[in-house]
Image (cartoon, rainbow, N blue to C red; front, side, top):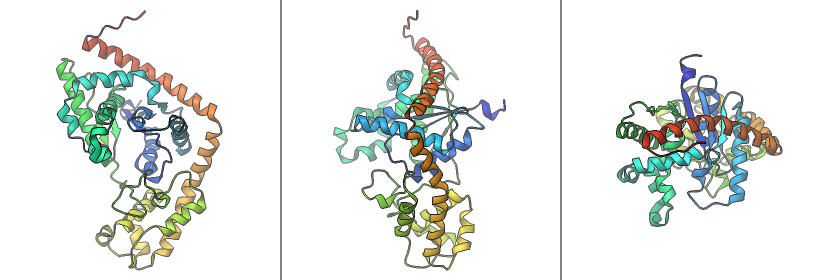
Length: 340
């Protein structure tokens, strides 16, 4: 086994439904490339999904849909461990212990809580506030050494590192929890709304034309790209000019992410042209890459028993690792665990 393969990756996607190309480029595509070089745990973080109001039936469906998306996108259950977070009780057990380790001031600085709670933070759930402790537990229950993160999760990983260090120090167990390192793909840019290049592509946006779902049919993809906002002028010749045009820059990032073509080469190809040819070619690339995933997701969703079996197999493998860690944690903390 190689040195890299000895390293452990943990990451997950929240089952909030209707995953889009931002989720794919920012997370799932990277998961596929990691599984040959790391020991990978990929979970569906359903416990995180209940920090806000939700429909239980839709949550169950979305959980299966994320699992199907993982598999359809190329995550191999024989290479990686795929499971839903709530099936492993040790996540919640370790999260409670981290609730008692983490300082209130640390959590108060988390910008994502402020963003999600908005002005009505007094009515936000306490789960939303302590969500980063559960995220830390997700990572550290498997003693993950590496975590793929985007810009919006960097702060939470920094908190995870602080929690690991404080636990190790408080209980005089140096190096018990590793200090996980971020995996940041510098070639992947944050994918923004097709209607507003200053807003992140989001499933919660009221307009369907703001995003491209992994379940969109080919004609929907073409229509959405045709309607996507660009600029009144022709395609600029220099990247410095492109960066000032948020929506154009976003479409180039999408094109580059799906085609594997360097953004500078794309600018050279389309400079001085109007955006119709560019959009047509981008649509072709998206349809070519997304259609097989869409077809496979829909096929898998008709094979519910197969997905449940994949999740059960992943649950058994993940639980074996998690139970060993939580057993050690209980012993370190001084909690009595009477096993028969």
